[in-house]
Length: 293
Image 1 (cartoon, rainbow, N blue to C red):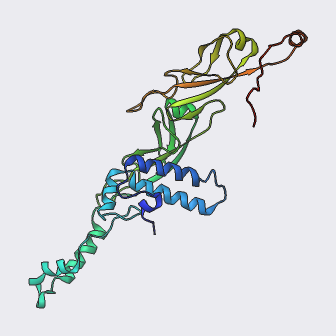
Image 2: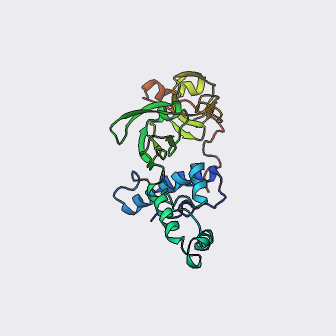
Image 3: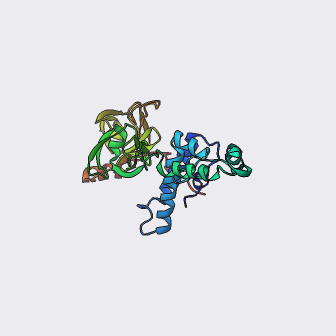
């Protein structure tokens, strides 16, 4: 039996949508099967967390769960009520007022068995490249009926985001609406870029000459290469901000920046450089001044 989704995600009944999203992402990352290979307990935890998020991340489902109309697994519950209200409603139907019970209970179970019911949701997992998630893209999935479906990944998609395709889940029963297809996005790491919120971090190597004299350096960004100016006398580890070159704006989100950290590399040392360094000095300069205990 599925557990209470609020307890599974560790949030309160009055939790905001942002609270639920944050709790889900934290737990989904902790128990994801890719990070816990051959760990059945973690796999079960991940399934429980995904199911809980399926209920609470959907405003309609959350409201129905809170009203007791569906259970923690999203299945329909029997109509609510107590025996006294039914007895009162049928008081005139038989001796002592109990003549209507058989019809009442028959109607309850008939509604549950034959009434309209929403179809179950289908869950999918899709892997996207770093740049696909940042810039947006298209992925193809195969539905249970064998049909292929192209889904659009919105720009700025994050690890663990869930896309909902209305009506693309299991068909409903007796005229009930179809369930939804829920596609969870998992983003591959990039060999150079690292994302933090709307900003992207990048480390760029520069030569000793470029650090001392300055110069123009070509820098990759999610939208393509740009030319950045390195100022003379730049220290290794200096950071430069390229505004508007991070995660693109989408919906209510603002555009992010690209934060470039410069790393000075010497490269091959030839005899001329070696001879120059032997005769070069920086009086009064100690790169380790104040360093250490």
